[in-house]
Length: 218
Image 1 (cartoon, one colour):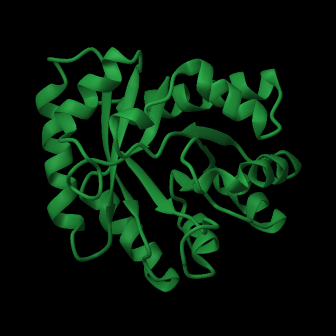
Image 2: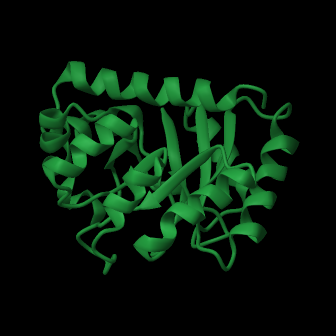
């Protein structure tokens, strides 16, 4: 398993990064990205600390760790600048908190994130076919999520991504240890979203490929 969307005590997660990494390793995960919630108010505080712990643990733990952020409830006109700032500060993975069905995310967030070329658009809710086509052109991964509530739109996301040729990833959006689902559970969630076995395996390869690209030089 690979999870490229997780949260620690630096936002609303329950664990310090080292414990989350250790628990993920013991649960059979091969790679993990710390992507705590940020906006302009805390980006320069959170990200350097995640980068530091990834460096400190690099030779001490048998799991690939990446430091990133999830830009959360950033007004759409500011998303592009926030993405640029995150990358300038060294974010390996930039996620945007998409237009989930269960939170009041500002309309236009999905499109702004896609236009900015983020790595992952998390739980994008009722994303349009036009937006999914933009994701395909921009090389942005759309997320199938195991997280309760956010997962309500998984079937729609899978269907529209297939129509548009957009690439998918499966993430946990992990906040607590119990969010680190097993490989078997993740497969059931993917199949439950309407994906077939080949598409599930393709999602797994997408995750591995992204980790390999973002791990270069780390």
